[in-house]
Length: 377
Image (cartoon, helix red, strand yellow):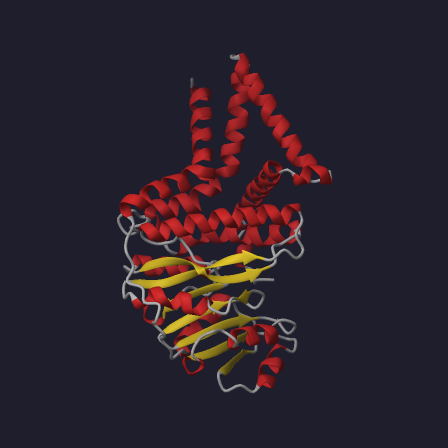
């Protein structure tokens, strides 16, 4: 009976993480959706913040993209914070000689969070846009981002990250599918109240709502908006505000990035314990479902395997379940070796899910050993 209870509980929790949470959100939108007093004609002064470290090959192209945004140029400024760059990043920024661009040079590398605190402290515009060097913003992205900020109850607005076809392989297609689900979740969370986190490559926020974050923060794109939620603001998701990237086709690179992200999720609770307090965090259910329960995926997979093996000695039906698990894991592993299997969407999704579960274990180990405190590579 104990093993049966473990099996049922782990299956239900895994199903909730994989699909149930999004289904619950969709069901609740029709009942609990909150209106937003958006104004599509709203055009506040905006300062774009770009934090870089050794981005000499990308920074000029990125600045050209930002300066071409379809937004009143007299209401637009750009601050580039160079965090200890040792290449020609700063020289390329200075070479543009554009009065709208301000360069802050930090001679010694610190952290993205420290640079963000500095940029916000020195900013003048009421609205700030955060973006990264690699992604390209759509011409109308900023226009769509600021429209919901006309509502004084809104503290931050996240854009949507899309992917270009260049460099696609089976692994990158799995990562893209993961992001499609992530965008759906954030959209529905925001319709009910607030999204749990924003897209680091494209989000805008009200400068007056910003609270400085610890310099060691890994996930500023979660802690910054969640501090605004704790202060009473809403955090929205605007799918029409788009940034474009090339999905990672390098599993080793994605492993390093995701390992740091998982460690960052654990760090969030240490930095802001109020996030786990349902009396302080009004979107506690969303935060736990979206960020914390996912960390249990490897344990749940192990629980399903162990309990079904134990039950197979008592009930023949569970022998088939054990065999099905072995077959599925075997096919997922084989899909990493056999190109023709990589065309199957179910196996691509399974590979992405298993990779994320593996990265979760690595992230937990990284956090436990305090390796997450080393500087970003």
